[in-house]
Image 1 (tube, rainbow, N blue to C red):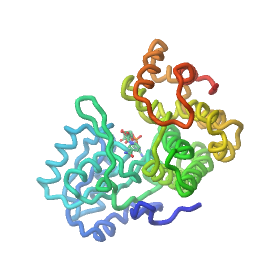
Image 2 (image 1 turned 90 degrees about the vertical axis):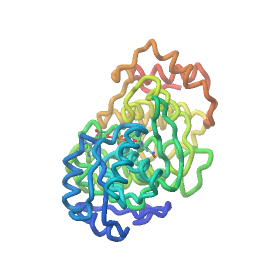
Image 3 (image 1 turned 60 degrees about the vertical axis):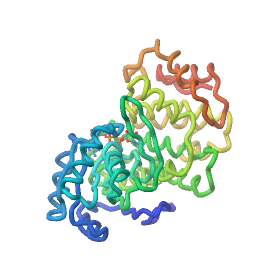
Length: 353
Ligand code: NAD
C-alpha cells in the first residue's frame, strides 16, 4: 500500500500504538508552549488525560465541540483561545472536534495537531463545514488543514462497535465516490483503492475483536487514505443525498452514509461500471452496490432509513429536495431513479437499479 509518513497534502502523518504520548515532542517541533486541547463533552476524560500528558505546555481545555461546527460555539472557543494566549490547538476526537479545531484555525491562524478517534477523515482534508442559523455551508482553505495527525489505534479502540462500523462505511463512501469523480487522477484512484482495501481487510477483524490494535491501525490507515482523497476530488450523488437527508430530515451523519452508500453506488454502477470494478474486486462480491450492501450487512451496519426514524411519507419530499440543485454525477439523475433508490434505502432492501 502507498502509505507514507507524510501525506501528499504536506501534513506530517504518523501511525502507532501509544503515539498520543509523543504529543510533547510534536508540540515542541511546532514551537508551541501553550496548547489548547479540544474535545466533545463526551470525550472530556480523553482530553484531560492528554492535557496531563502535555503537562506545562497545556494552557487550557475547551470541551464543547458540537456536530456540524456551530459558529456560536466556535466564537466562544476563539475567545477562550485568545484569552489564554494559546499558540496551538490539539483536537482529540472525531469529525466534530476536528471541525472545531479547523474553525478556530481559520479565524486565528493557529497550527493544529489532530488526534482522530473515529474514521470520518476530516483531519486529512482542507474542508470545513460550519452551521449558522440552521444553515450548513462548506469551504475549502489550506489554512484549516492540521499540520500534524497522530493516529493512535488505542484511541479508536474505544469507539463503540456500532459507531465503528458506521464510521468506517462513512469513510469508505469518500473512496467509493472518488473512483468516478470527474476530477480524479491515477493518484486519487490509487488512494481510494488503498482506503477501501484497508477497511475491507481490517474492519471484519475489528468487528470480531474491537481491541485488535493491528486491525485498528489498518482501518486508521484506511481513514487517512479515504479522508485524503475526499480533500482532493469532488463528490457526487451519494454525498449530495446524505447532505439532503441529514440537513432536511435531521438524520445522523455516519448512519445515513452507511445506509445510502450501497444504493448510490448501485445507481452509478449502471453508468460507469468499469470505474467501480475495484469495489467488487476488493469486497470479493458481485455488482459494486450489492457487494457493499453484503459487506455492510455482514459488519452489522444499520440497513434501513426507516430505522433511523425517517417516515415513508417523507420520501417524495426528499426526492424533490435532492433534485432541486442539479450537480455533476457520472449517471444522469432522474426523479424515478432517485425515488426508487430512496425507497430501497428506506426499507432496507438490497439495491436495485
Ligand atoms: P463525531 O465527532 O460527532 O463523534 C460522534 C460521537 O462519538 C461524539 O459524541 C464523540 O465524542 C464520540 N466519540 C468519538 N470518538 C470516540 C471514541 N473513540 N470513543 C468514544 N466516543 C467517541 O462524529 P464523526 O462521524 O467523527 O464526525 C462527524 C462530523 O464530521 C460531521 O459534522 C461531518 O460533517 C464532519 N466531517 C467533516 C469532514 C471534512 O472533511 N470537513 C469529513 C468527514 C466528516
